[in-house]
Image (cartoon, rainbow, N blue to C red):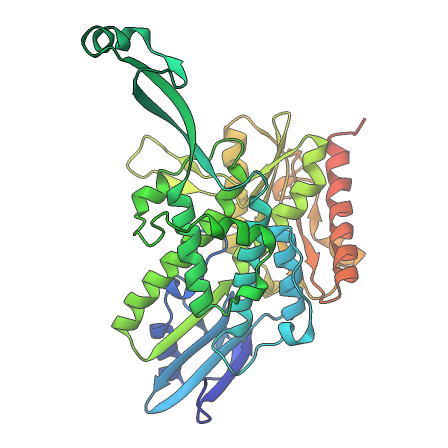
Length: 443
């Protein structure tokens, strides 16, 4: 429970905040990337501070992280709370799209409580874990094939004639092999350890569990689920076609376990702070990939993100990861997701973002891909007006007539109203589809 003497500092993400410079620097010192809970491995963990100083406006600026940081500074207890600028309900909508689940939308769930640290985020993590595990348990608990060898008077499975010659002659026994499916104890150990952490630290209670989840947890009894699972054990997991649906929840559970371990190390190093944040840039990118994949996978497009290497055989080799690639018949469209303020003011257009996306385009063209279009995708406060859509579209790259690749700045207007958000999403897909049909006529 929080002390009454805690002083609140409440602000939105990507917003300006009035702070004493020494206090701001101390906040950044308390915040580390281990304070961020990752929902996927898609977005790189950049060493971006929680607060940056804008020398033009002479103010501190919050970044893309939402959550709460509790710390003591000069004898005073503080809570820095960074709220999603589009609202808590919008955050729920985005996570529903990313994980293809339905989260509760009670008003009590949409507001952060002052009773527990990071109550909303912790509840969301627990709910996502429950929903994902329930979805994964379609064919039962994950199992892996194991060939067991038997030596005796009867055959179990398949007789191994070659290996039976000597035992049959010497001991009157035969050797047989039987393929059996054993429960994957590593996967269940990871799931159970995550469950214990969620119950202790993330407000998960047994009455929140579905029958599917309880079925999986019931199989953890007697499997040595308290054993320590190493990183090597985790990386060696193989799922097979039938149990491939378990990979997302195992990865999610592993993040919960790793964060617990990192948190213990962090608290030992700095006992005066406690933090938990989500990366809105990661959520935004995953949301866009989900939206585009659902819209275009059925039309024959592959929608993915992949790491490429420039100058792969050189000492100055560098990796590059376009956020979203649409590919069909050697034609590609490249998008970079940017969770930044975009109101089409001159200073909203970041030159580094433009250089980055054009580099991706040039690289794909060098790989003999036909780049039909590329662009930057932002979350908007209001639906994109037709005039803004036209002003932020170029029929050719660099505005040169010699190029047949279009370029555009676009995105989706985020709303706490679910119906309006769906309408804005469809409007975005219509704008994109219009540009695709110009280059690749549909049948």
